[in-house]
Length: 445
Image (cartoon, rainbow, N blue to C red):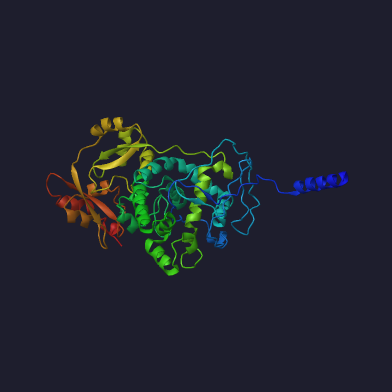
């Protein structure tokens, strides 16, 4: 009997040792929580810094996210396994860094999901596009703080700022094959629709402040149309009409579902995952191996009003700074002066220089002695013909347009014509005498 009891006890002991224990690993989630509704962004790629389509494998067509956040017990940087292309990059050495145990994961106010396509772009930025992306990150801190504020003031998620990271790398002078310009890559007509002037004298698509406000208005309209930030982002890239037709054709309002079909271009399909990848890296660069980045100082400036056609050299002199500093703060200005037909133009000057500017500008500015007209050069125009047309001397025209007797006119060129505010004697024969003998060298062809 005793043997039987011992045998039963041993069986029970051994069987209990083989049973699974409670407290198994928690199931991993597949999304990063967001504090708002589903939101995303759109972006057009600049020509020089755009990843080549040949570098990216076809989309795996996954419509659901597959992200699994790293365990808190893992102290090492999470790395990717999916390559962006079939070609290896032997020169790339990924540095594994200890992860700060107490560091909290970055929060987003747009939805962040990670699927195979997002992982591909993360790896692309870590490898093939590493040099370019590093320069983008270095420039990003110059613009992100005030751009976030502008987005917030317009009632939009602040993290939409990472659209501009992909659009242009925060380069105000970025210009694409589709003739999109500025940090938010507006084409001419869309920029005009949202209040951005673009002409011979000025291109406000390059103004970081004005273009951000315009982008916020455009994105808000897109979101009001689609009620989904992912679709709004795609609409920013392809146009709202294209996305609306895609939704109708394939009977879905799911962006990831639309990427399975051929109707949308690859650039549009890659739009959202590319932005998500950039946002993830930008918010936690060290996690993805981007260390030692020399970030540019945040952009700060004052604004002052100046008369139309004010020489930038005069503004620089009044601020006691270099001409390059004034140009750098005002990338929207295409010429040497503030634009005509813009009375009381607000120009940006270095932060803290407003007082000295106001004090010195009054003594330096010669006063409003002229009113200005613009003349667009046509075929057959010469300087003397233009001067005669407006009944002014040739010298002021040459001086105000930074030209000389040997300069050539080209069709479409815009000239400033200074007209005296106080009527004076007509130039008469003096204009003819001064322009004699040089017309043949300066005719427009």
